[in-house]
Length: 395
Image (cartoon, rainbow, N blue to C red; front, side, top):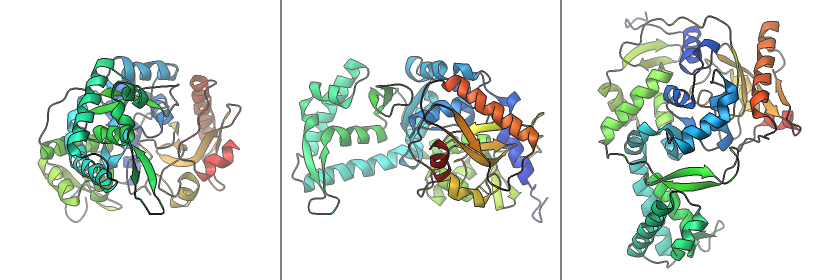
């Protein structure tokens, strides 16, 4: 207990919680992509391959990764790829669609639509009434088709091909197409989602699909529910962690913490929070564990304050200049190195000089690399955001 009577949760226990609740320790691995997504709340979807790689790292039977993830996303509709926190694309359990939209998407959507109309007006493009007509026509066409590319929708609604000049006279002047900008806004508004890609599971060219039907929730209640789910998966976390992950104002974070009755605990970084009833000690996994996690993995990107699982000296080699994490190697709850795939398909990894994890750890990491290679097969993976160590290893 600290001086205020709060239980202290140290680094060792935080790593125990991470191993079990993030489905990384061997016995904690999941049986399906749905279980993975429910446990993690959200999978980063900006890099298409990262979704499958994050799932595969957590499935008990990694050989099922591609088929089962495709089923959950595109056949059963159990998972959905949509805009979420921080104006970023994630894959969520479909049951969270309403919560995500009300808690994070609605306010952003209003700003994005206003920005689109302002930019079109500045270029002398048609007005809001015209855009509404085009939108309604495009959504009707999408409903008829089920899924469609922007080009296919433009065949049904030719006005989507209209173009306008953005930022005329500025150094960043460009030509925007109505279809691209409107579909992006509709995605933020929760009216459309990403559908099946045009290529394989590594493709970044997606069809569009109507968003799953969902009720309009009260934003405050939705924020409380999203925060409760995330703290269950990732607690303890600091206020800064919560503000960063959600993209909310600090007042919204505090209101949601109060709404769910979150309990304060002591961390090495200061005050942290867990869901009600989660202050008790958590024992570690029965066996040591290793993992190879992809770029933008939700565990590596889960907290703003990362020193308890990622040594500061490793950051320059594992992150790009925008703060995106590359592929990481884990041993017993901490990042110990990075990995990459070479042009010939070989999975290679490296621990930095001075990182002596021992023979057992290296054997476990090697086994994880072989496990990853076995299901990735001949598919070639290049992270969307390249990081220094990944570039070096893949050369």
